[in-house]
Image 1 (tube, rainbow, N blue to C red):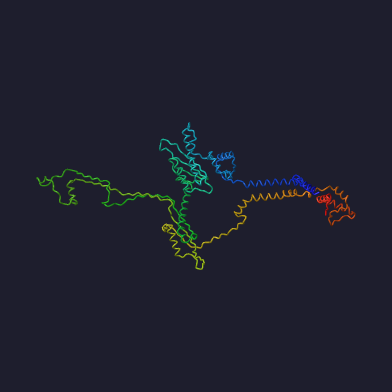
Image 2 (image 1 turned 30 degrees about the vertical axis):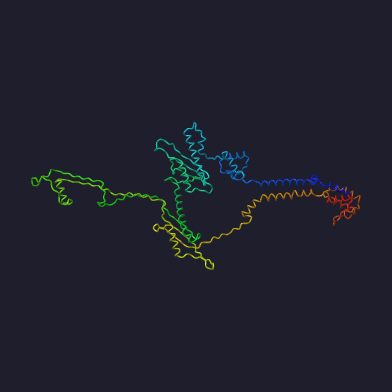
Length: 561
């Protein structure tokens, strides 16, 4: 008997197919859906956890280069994505540098700007002179564009050169000119030094080009370079305003540099207003010196004329040998007016004439004065000093305004710093006043809105969400079906038909039944046996598993008690 019992117990262990057969149709559907969902969630979570990080391969590519790179990536079986707006090509982070090297070996990206490599690829056989000159101009424009795009502030550039044809007449030759259009990066501008560098770069690259013949525009059409002289527009006004701002900033920084070491870095504020004269003036003056002394005069030309008119004067004196002798040397002064007049009269005779014309140089000074632009007309400076803070021996801090002597010293320092000129109308005002303390109200940021918490939540969102969803599917659909399949076979014996139970009750009416539910009202006309039979049927309909166990114990001859 024990051996038979063991054999029957072993044979009663159900297989997987039998356990699945015990489930009804709804339980089988729930089990299948739950298993599929669990597997899908696990695969998706694994893929999201191992998803590669994407990095920018190339950005701001031309359409032609972008298409060539995408086609090459497809041939190389390298996954790629497009950035926001399609302005960049993204590849996995671990393949960025390898992909760049491979594309560079194939000459990608070629770039939308071509330089002097056009001269290498051009077929010069049969090329006309116009085509050669046009190819050279295109190459020069491309090289200048590449050089300008190398600046950190410039995103894109385009250069147009106007190179006139040279002829044999030097006077009729036209000068070349250039136009440059630059596109700036977001939030970047060109300062005056960078703009001057671009102009100098273009003008130095083309022979006989004047820097004034180079025009630079931004992508909005605003002229950045200085307009030619006499041209209208607001270019000159903008430069004048910028010059005024630079002067004011220079003087303000000078005041702060000299006062901050004395009163403290946060205890002084200074503002300077400068009035500049940008008018251009020119004056010409001629100066003549008065007549100078005879010793310092300069003779330009001199003319002396002597003439005798009429007959010769008759001979006078004592005739004889003495009269025919020449006269002896004169003993009187030669410069005397009387002797000179007598000598002149004697030499010229009664009708003699002597004329002398002397021309002297006249001193003349021509002065041309051109007034410079941007001359300072007036400077006004306003300085505010904070109250002095003192701490006594007990550690108590007090604030007090500066004394008049201290303010006078500060005013003197400011005047010397800005080059105070009373005749020019400059003014300096230094006052002391308490500075208002800046009260910063801390903003309480909730924990769930802090950046660290948000980053942590984003990093764990996918893993935790995957685990939670998988647990929900496992507990809600798979686990009930598995519990039903794991039940003992005795708990899953199907209930016998109602007719077989009636036959059993008819054969053994004395077999005790399960206690009927209490507190039930039954019709008075039913007998005790009918009531017991009705209870048994109701129990069979309500709990067929329990009735089946009872029948099984009866068949095996076991005591149900």
